[in-house]
Image 1 (cartoon, protein in one colour):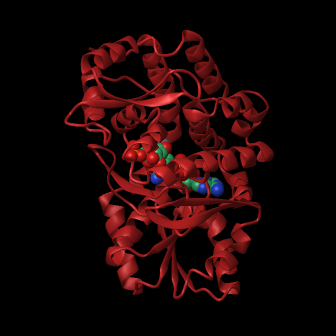
Image 2 (cartoon, rainbow, N blue to C red; image 1 turned 120 degrees about the horizontal axis):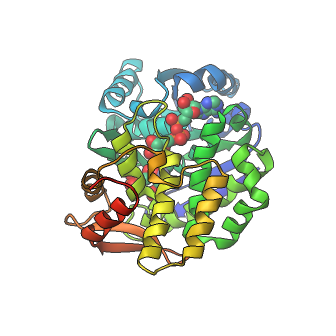
Length: 368
Ligand SMILES: NC(=O)c1ccc[n+]([C@@H]2O[C@H](COP(=O)([O-])OP(=O)(O)OC[C@H]3O[C@@H](n4cnc5c(N)ncnc54)[C@H](O)[C@@H]3O)[C@@H](O)[C@H]2O)c1
Ligand SMILES: O=C(O)C(=O)C[C@@H](O)[C@H](O)[C@H](O)COP(=O)(O)O
Ligand SMILES: [Zn+2]
C-alpha cells in the first residue's frame, strides 16, 4: 500500500491510498470519517460489479450506506442528474455530518463531488475511483463539475475529497478502451514535467496501456505524486495548475463538438489527440522540435489512442475556436494554451493569437 498525501495551505490535507484489495477494506478507512451515514453515488455499470463489495465492507465497519446510481457515461454530468442526485440526498435525509462516497470513474467523481459541494453548502466526500483515468487524475485535486452543451466542466466547484482509495484490483474489470483512455492522462503527466517517466511509459511501462497490473500500479503512483504536488501548490489554478490542462484546450473543444453521448469520444481519447495537437502547435511556433512531436505521436499511437483530428470526426475551425475561447483558462476572450519546449517541459502560454490557432486548425484538417 502506498500513501500519497495531498496538502496545501488552502485546504485540509488528505491521503490518496493506492493498493490492492482496498475496496474490501474501504469500511475500515472510511469509518473514522463517517460520524453518521454514507451515500454511495455510483453509475449503473459500476453498481453491478463493485458496489456490493463496498457496502459489505462498510457494514462490517459499522457504517450504514445507501446507493444512488446514475446512468453510465458522460451524459450524466448534467444539470438533470445533478438535480436528481441532490434530491435523493434530501429524500434520504442526509445531514452535514454524513458523507458522500463517489464509487466510479471520473463522471461519477465529478458529479458526486459537485453534489457534495452543494449539499447544505458542502459536506464531506470520499473518492473511490474505479477507472484508470479517475485513479491517476480525476479523484485527486478537488475539481468537480458538470458539462453543458456550451462546453465541458463549465459549472462546478473546487471541493477536495477527505480521502481517496485507489484499488488497482478494480481495474481488472475495466474495458480495454477505458484503460487506454486513462493512459492518455498518464502520458500527459510525463509530457508536462517528467521526461524520465515518459521514457519509462514509452518502454517497459507501455504494458500498462494493455492492462498490465504492475505497470498500472506504478503509473498510478507516479501520476498521483505529480498531480498532488501541483495541486498542493495551486489549488484553484491561479498559475501552475493550468499545466494539468495540457491537451485539454483542444481536447475539450473537440469533445464538446462530438457530443457527450456514451460511445462517443472518451475524455482520454480527446486529451491524447489534444496533447499531439499542442506539441504540433508548439513545433509550428519553433518552441519544440519536430523530433519531439514524432516521439509524442508514436507513443500515443502505440497506446491505441488518436493522434490526428480526422480520427475524431469532421470539424469546422471557427466552431472549435469559439469553444476554445469559452475555455476556463481564456482571459478577456484571449486564448490560453499549454504548450511545450520539449517532452517534460510544458508551460502556460497566455494571449495566444487566435488567427494563428485558426490557421493551425485548418492545417490539422478542420474546415475553413
Ligand atoms: N476532476 C478532474 O480533475 C478530472 C480529471 C480528468 C477527467 N475528468 C473527467 O472525468 C470524466 C471521464 O472519466 P472516466 O474516463 O473515468 O469515464 P467514466 O466515469 O464515464 O467511466 C468510463 C466507463 O467505465 C465504466 N467503469 C468504471 N469503472 C469500471 C470498472 N472498474 N469496471 C468496469 N467498468 C467500469 C463506467 O461505467 C463507464 O461506462 C470526464 O467527464 C472528464 O471531464 C475530471
Ligand atoms: O486537475 C486539473 O487541474 C486538470 O486540469 C486535470 C484534467 O485532466 C481534467 O480533465 C480537468 O477536469 C480539466 O479541468 P478544466 O478546468 O479544464 O475543466
Ligand atoms: Zn483530463
